[in-house]
Image 1 (cartoon, each protein chain N blue to C red):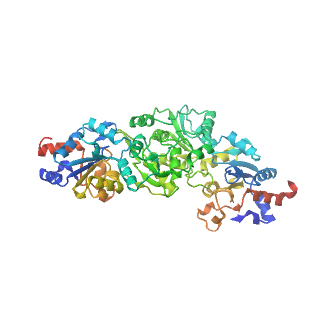
Image 2: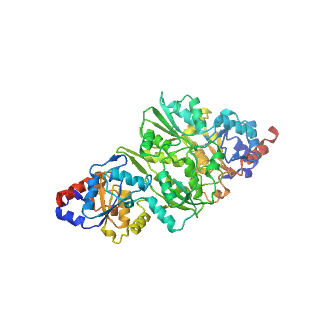
Length: 308
Length: 306
């Protein structure tokens, strides 16, 4: 693990010629909640100036790509709409390959995900209501019937998730031919550093435990997301990709599985203490680390001063 | 473990004279949620004819004692309202003992709320059924501090949603806030053919996210038994027969309590579970029987009509 700031000029030149693509996480790398991390906008600009293809890869499915693009642009990040990837796109791509025919998709998820699925041509099954009558028969009536029109269940983050809809999803999944796809699946919500926020992973765990099935994961660190990215951007050699992230299990794990080069930044979920004692799988160790993405820009300026 | 119907008359006499009191589960023993089990009222009558005191012990707090009593009477069970015990009563007793006067945040349905309110407790606002899909709305509805809340009660709630659950988790961050649970089944049987996600899954989330173990007041928790022993003034636990259909809930409960155990096969547990015992050895019942109807038939056969 090398500190980016300590690389000499020769090492930096070698470093910059070792990759053509930069895949960057958002939360903890470009911004933290509502505040952008200083200098990161310049880094994106500089990377593009030196000819690197920049792709934003976020697990956040609660915003549409359009909205995400709008937010990023407003915050000063020079990215195009088709340079943003979230599990939503991978979910759509995967479902399209599965020949659902005219079967419906039952979604545990928010409006942006549902909207994107509909725009992509999928028919969404109706969700159950927010409140039902307090009786066993009402509960049964809203959760047990399966008219076999549903061909896939997509389980993603949903702040309006309720028991009835969760059980309905479980009911559909009792039929083995119904596809089971997972979007966001963290057990803790990455909102600030407040680890006591229940994440969508707890609910997808209930579905998996109850139905004895594993959902196909579409968020980092899933290989399905990697497959989607490689296909969309025609990446031939994954070692020519530099992945920048702040989370070890999510980002470094994803990059390790995908065989990308890894840059870990300490501007988000992870503190420098991990360098002293690495409590994670050995393969997750980043190739490089830095305080933030700004350090990458400092390196670019050092190496390409006259060319920018 | 012996099948009650295989006992000789002498052995049955011995069995029936080994206890004075019967504690019986309801769902799976007396009825199956929405359907009756034939002959079970006669089974209860048989115990009473033999002079046994009968009390029903159910984990189901989704009905008030009043409603439960009405339903049981209508189904033919000769029982008084004070012969029905649910975790709600144990919760009220516990909170009163510790002189609890703050507000209670309840994950539960109307019945348990009513019981707690009727007992004089103040309930905190639960949370909306639906909110706008923004981080701000989410935070405003879940990450709230409320100094008046001194207890979280987590029971079954078919209208449970993420917001209500997260709100409970937020309150539980304060170690001074008491954490009580009611029914914690992972499996919720509906009728004969369906098993749905039970409330236990959600309580487990609260335990995991808060890092706290609850003060459990439903079977198989021994705290429920503490309430029962006190309320019914049980002096000799060996003279109590506990009847249930769930091994992990009823048999476990009765084992910890030191009661005699009768497992009925009219509900959750099936014959296969008995013949191929995969549970802890100590949970094994002393006897098992098809249903309470069989108990009635045995009593009638050997000891005359009920």
